[in-house]
Length: 544
Image (cartoon, rainbow, N blue to C red):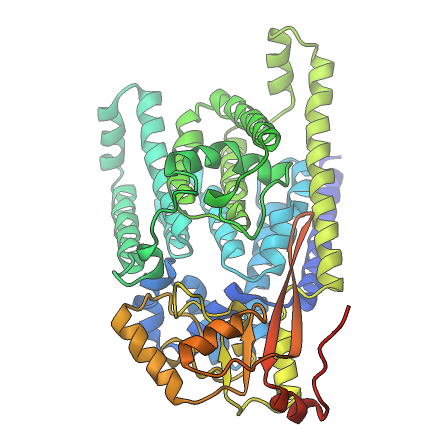
């Protein structure tokens, strides 16, 4: 009977792996990469190994592992989309296989987790380092149980976390600190905890290695004085850091599992939600924390529950957008994995507690099953909408713009991309994404003649010098911008006559996130004469 159940379990895992893989391939095939995906690829493709490892990290704000992998893929001759999608797919498969065949989760949990929104769509279809980050967290969880007996593989997993993302440097540090604090609490002695580490020479050496790796990564990503992120001033209309820290605990958990209040186009510090949404998210998040607390308290893991996330929340309070919210899901998988390794999680843990509080066990069980069902239904609903829109709608207009430029034979024409009034180097995002479909930058005014955004901030002297350089190029043939109204500002800056009134092409984008779909357009503007050359007819203003 045991053998039969094991075979059934393996068969279900294989089916889930195949289904998730097939859905991911469909999503990747239909997905039009956006700025973030192109920025990483272009930086990796066009930069030297030295700059990938030690220079651009100070401006990107993240360790170089994702760029290293993309540079390897580009060096093998893979095209933009083939490079980013194939590398990401490798980690999608790794994560699914780890969950299905190595995790201690129940059969039901193994069936549900891969279909969560962040795993199935957000981090599988959109090729960024977050699936690699998820993989590193699961590897760390897998090695955690035997960390004292096999410290090398445990610390290598944590080092892997450190080289993937800035969030995971904090996460890895929090895991180690929580382990030490938890051990001191269990031993009721800081001295015994320290003695235990010192006496385990292999673990001590590995911790020194981990600390050195973490410090190296922190030094590698420390922003320079001219880094865009370091130059940002505090907007009085944004939430304060303490408020954002509180949101990290009382908004992000709910937004991972049940609610969809946040807009993908806004940083968390910018969000102003209706009070009802704030209360609902806070209440649901507290229930999630309560459930995790019940699980961890029984296993004497309270320090391990709260300390790592306290570290992560420091960074999320500084910088986070909704597509980053999945860091909580990764953290939760780590906690549930390590807790399950100690003792299998059972519904009875909650029903017994409910009985002590005067609630019937059967009613408590129904609530738990209902919550799990709600999570599954909500996430599958988000997945279904996201995949449907991914198939039917363009995620970003960049591929279509690049194809239009090639089709019209405009690659050798003078093409200008518009920039922000506050930062001359912060150009139209889809222009950068379009560059990924060419072997060089097709725009003559990108910062430092790069194909990607440098994230540097120019001082007034440099700005004047750069504008003079662009003026010397003469009038552009076409402009790529977020709206026709931008041409006036650009022409004023460059001393051009503002006659770029003809809309040569409109690229449409749909930012897909859960049940939301934000629309934005990118315009290719030109003069009437240029329009006639491109299309062989006079430009006519659209009437509605």
